[in-house]
Amino acid sequence: MPLFLSILPCMSTIQENITRINAILASADHHVDLVAVSKYQSADKIDQALRAGQRIFGENRVQEAYDHWHTYKNDAQYPDLTLHLIGPLQTNKAGDAVALFDVIETLDREKLAKKLAQEMQKQGRRLPCYIQVNTGEEPQKAGILPAELADFLALCQGEYDLNIVGLMCIPPVSDPPAVHFAFLAKLAKEHGLEKLSMGMSNDFEKALPLGATSVRVGSAIFGARE
Ligand SMILES: *Cc1c(COP(=O)(O)O)cnc(C)c1O
Image (cartoon, rainbow, N blue to C red; front, side, top):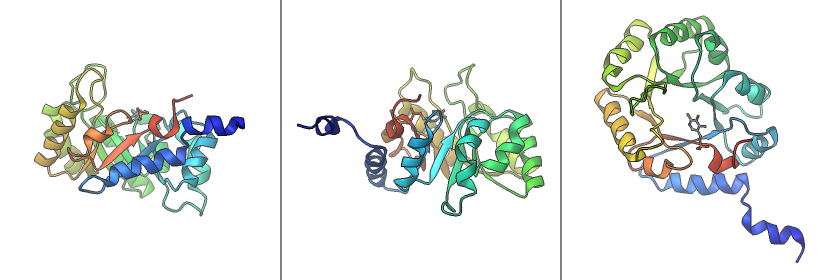
């Protein structure tokens, strides 16, 4: 047997991964967006995802996202390309983030809310934002504490006129994720927010019945990060 035939069955391509994951998302009783997390992935793999029709991508650093995406962003071939910032944002990078990204998922403190509001006004780009909630109350993790969410949301909407569309969380690695997904869904409902960004490669299937409206999937699409 030729070598390539013997290797083939154990490799799945990026296109196959995206198709498989989309089929799982389609089994949910509501629409779920697939945010393909392209951080630390090669230009070739990103190109394969684009060729497979994927148009929503997540990145966690502004500079790397710029390197990966600024050419595609200016390419008329991809008018619906949508970039989500899913990593911590320093206030001094807020201007670059507003210019490059379409959705900010990691709004987590007042100083950042203020800076984002200024930059969005200046650039005329009122981007949808998610508030990141530290559902596990982990000291080292970014995010608003659940008890502080109501005040922070009121501040973002009232004082800064930000377009808050939903909540995002990254559960503690040591906990069953479903508990955190259910909690985030409850918080969103209490505060009248529609969108829930929750679920990654290892647990996105558990997030679907709990109301995820988008999942952030990296390694299950692209393989291990380089
Ligand atoms: C890297 C990352 C992901 C994707 O993780 P995978 O386990 O590779 O799917 C999702 N969300 C955030 C916030 C991340 O930083």
